[in-house]
Image (cartoon, rainbow, N blue to C red; front, side, top):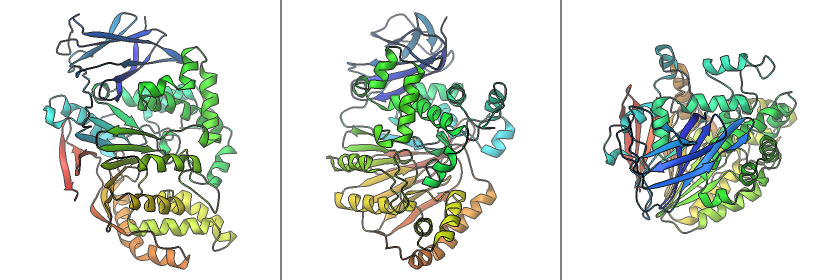
Length: 527
């Protein structure tokens, strides 16, 4: 009899449709029965509508996306059945519901990044802190309607393939002893990594009832993923990276990317069509291998119309052009797509980039300087040392791809409309404001993976103190042109685990965990 392995996860939602994603233990038909009534412990058989989809199989794992289409009102609760057997909701939890996005778009977006999925015992809470996403789920279970966000944006490092939990390490050691040691190697291990990340009861319920949109960052694949051409060459020389990157991108496509797409976009996806016809893991692997080797062959970025707000989620990892002397955060095909997206009519833009666009100015200058040295401006010996420095200190943000930073800066300046860039990655939270321009960088990181007290002070000193003094001097010595505009950090930094909300059009609030609840860290009203 099939069982529910991961999910249900409520993914894409718009004004008249919603998508529920599941992983099951066996091939089956997945039914979503909408409109049931009950309190979470039991549901009546009086449903307003039934929706179903068959599973597809890759590498021995089975998945389905059930589209609820033609909806005219919110769904107060829904149940999931596998071949007619009820498997959801969980006993004792509130009902999973679906709130549609009306023509006016969302009122509130929640967002954050960087969440390790280690246990919640005392030892791990001491080192990793409380899981704010888990606490947020507990909070929403009893919160009033006014506190619910309409959409959750997960901005990278949803899983840590290079730093697994103790439970994940046990799973790995029980099945192999070959490289990579202490890291994810293949699709089977990625599937278990996602299962462990998303099946805590509190997390599972939250993801079943709150729509999510996601984009990857490096740890979803591996630390420093696509930092430079040298990094790629070093990884290609290992015995295990090819299998790992194929598995990582394939798993991302199944577990994260598919749910970002609308029903119409998925219906047009040739890979999904072939998998539904039984193509299996080989087809997914071929797609993933090509996506890594030829980034322009696939697009992980996507955009949505949310009333007067246009949401653009940007792939700032896989789409990079790493040519020394002409590094680009986005290759020409991806850049042309982004230009088109930001130019479409909207009252405001919300851009999701896993890595910050606006760093503290001093750090920005240091990354500019390092890129110039990596390109050989001070000779070949310094170039080699600078590449080591680039990887060791994670100098890989938009500032380390200066040409793309300047191109995007000028593009956003020409728009003359508010632009809010939501990011994570750096393990602290802050707001930066462009001088004279309605461009804001809003960072919320981590959800659960805090810096140690020593590293917090090191970051304050290096990023907001020493770098501010030294960065500009280094940039001038390397003859780097000044950026198109200046900016400054106007709120933060905060270093605790956090989740943030954007209440449109301009209110940002950060929350931290207090056990099974959350409390406000700070809030800012943008002009």
